[in-house]
Image (cartoon, rainbow, N blue to C red; front, side, top):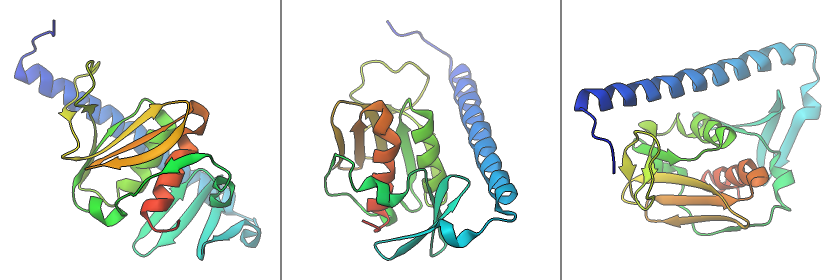
Length: 193
């Protein structure tokens, strides 16, 4: 049986979870920016540029940065290193389909969550963790969403795949490859691949 909570208790818990997520992500973003500035002194940036499919990526502080119009995208993996990644990629909506709309995320992988947040937060109206409608157990007090909303569901699996069904994108793969598969997804939706 599911516990019954008052509306105030649910709202308080949801606000607390959102604040924790916001603080963690702000610390990650601030730490990354600080690290980029500190490491940029005295380094030869010409050796850090990579051109992939006509797009120029700059390696800063171990991340690959792509300036595209008004957006700056950050990738953990060098895009050239993803060419040997064994992953099925179906047809995906482009980044513009997320613009100005809420984006929900279901993932237990901190690195994937950070990667998605850093890249989507500049495009979407807001981001929020949520439980997928088909999940029988929602351990936290999160909203339950389905594929009528923009929703990214990340799960561990033995086979790598990126599949879009309605508003849902299912990113699956071995735990050690989930960040690489997420980068593959991001490169695809921004039109690099």
